[in-house]
Image 1 (cartoon, one colour):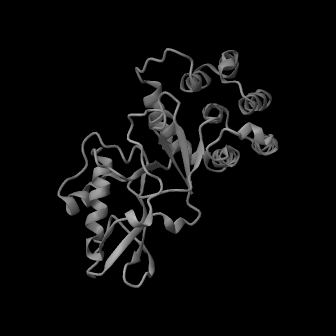
Image 2: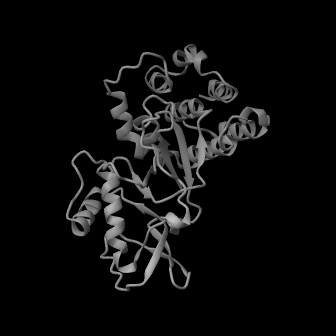
Image 3: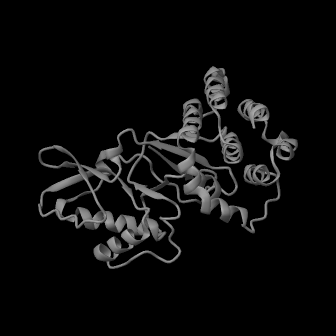
Length: 294
């Protein structure tokens, strides 16, 4: 399973989150306080409080590209959940014995932890994408529910305490927008899928020299995600795509979001005629493939 997030890396005044938290700084609480602690942190995150600390991800790539990166200049983070049981789970260590625990944490249930032993919370990954369940959970634990403007359900939101091993795309983010747009319009056949993976793998290392972390694997993961899970992605991003289409946002230059809507509304040839701004080795190959097989 993949989760996606936009990090506000270009705004020096933005609320930049910490992806790694040293062990000595992770919260130490009583086990009996675990549910209340998590509820409070979730409430602060979804209600946009100034002291929020959690990382908000989306199960939808489109939500991140179209809603949370309107100027297309920030980092796209990709979190890979290799084990499906990691979702809706809390990891902690018992302070006295150093014993590690991983427990299922269900917002629909009353998570009662009666033991008073001290624990250190190491991480948690929680799906909060159901507004009704989340609102009832927060009201029960914190006496405060969701603000009306909060949108965890529409955003397909998952909250994470820390995520130090994210894959990151920034140098080739315009290519991700291009591939996403062409996929929405024309789909992806097996030839495009295999050819893109082969092309990305065969690129010289210097093509990724400026990456914070190698974007080669990140781009391959995006290709595989769209090929295998594109149908689910379309369903998740439909409302956000309509919001973006009907937005009154004014752009003073031709950017990947404008190009995306040109592809969807005006087709390949029109968008390709304006594609010089988005010219790099990966985008060029994406255009070439879809030019043959659209």
